[in-house]
Amino acid sequence: MDGNKQRVVVIGGGFAGLNFVKHIDAGKFDVTLIERNNYHSFPPLFYQVASSGLDPSSICFPLRRELRKRHGGRVAFNMGEVTEIDVARRIVTTSRGKVPYDFLVLAAGTTNNFFGMPELVDEVFTIKSTAEALRCRNEILSLLERAAIEPDAARRRRLLSFVVVGGGPSGVEIAGALGEMKKYVLPREYPTISPDDISITLIEGSDKVLGSMSADSSEAAARSLRDLMVDLRLGATMSRYSDGRVTLADESSIPASMVVWTAGVKAEGFNLTSGGVPLGKDVTGRAGRFPVDRFCRVSGLPDVFAIGDIALVTDDTDYPKGHPQLAQVAIQQGRLLARNLNRDSVDTGEWKYFSYKDRGAMATIGRNRAVVDLKHLRFHGFAAWLVWMFIHLISILGMRNKIAVLVNWIWAYFNYSTSLRLLISPARHPRRRS
Image (cartoon, rainbow, N blue to C red; front, side):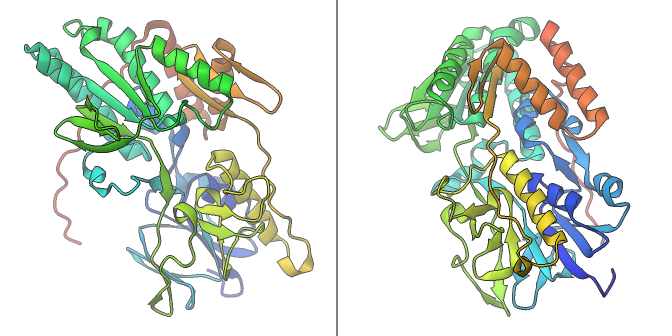
């Protein structure tokens, strides 16, 4: 580190953090990236890992490689969990030491929001990370293998009762993937299981799936899900999950051997202190997000910035509840903040306000089934599916990864067969001595 340079510490290697690091001037600042994993992943395709459509290595990219390619080793990487941020002393404490800063960029993204039901942490499956997607894949395959040799029909149906909670893009996509397994994969690979034995239910609290998209896209997605034999429970909310049954707010219940939770997110929390005194929740807003100005500065903390899903722009009249927690918002904020910091100072008037450029939204429900909402155009079906594949393919980092994903998609398209339906559970790790 160069003592003459200002120190910039970035927490989080997702879309926001990585795009910030890629565009910051490493010749002007000493930059340190802190991330709990040593890789960047591609969250829009987590559901494909969870449903055995893609291998995790196809959507994960070593952070050190990306930093070396962009800055030639001038950006430091610190793998660890952040345990405390002292904004008075300007020190970030991680599980492996302390990192001082002059400017701090919070880009840690979101985690699951269970809406006051903390017991669900140990009960349901989530797909907010690569590890969670793998855990979900293992459970789906385990249930299928157990059901394939289960002689009792009633018990077999209980084993194969899947419930997805949340009708947003993640919920629709994982429910559609399960529907495709039921309709196309089971007859080929699990001949002892009847498609009638497996039930897939999608629970959504509002009156439509994909609530943030147009009515046409929502209706097209619902039709596709029903064609894949997914039971839609709209206008229903989950109140609890116990004894293998999901209970709804109206006290009706649904059998559920496996519950996949995609119903909501909240910002990753931090232990913020000032000179050792906890700041509590005074600096956070709705769903734990940090209120920021249009320069992405956290309110009341001029040397701290927040970008991506963790940031809440409160003075934007177009988005009174904050920008949508989408990859495009994170990417645009990360790039803008880096370019602003590369300029002399916000006081010189050279900094630019953040203004979100909405490039549309899309979701896929399965093979030949997708919906796309652009500013002046909405369409669905095969054409939308091709657009969805193209956009996601070009967004993945690394040519090797692009080729691997494309080959997997082409192979699966023509024969519904994949070598990725492997049930691999982690082995016990020997005790560490240091």
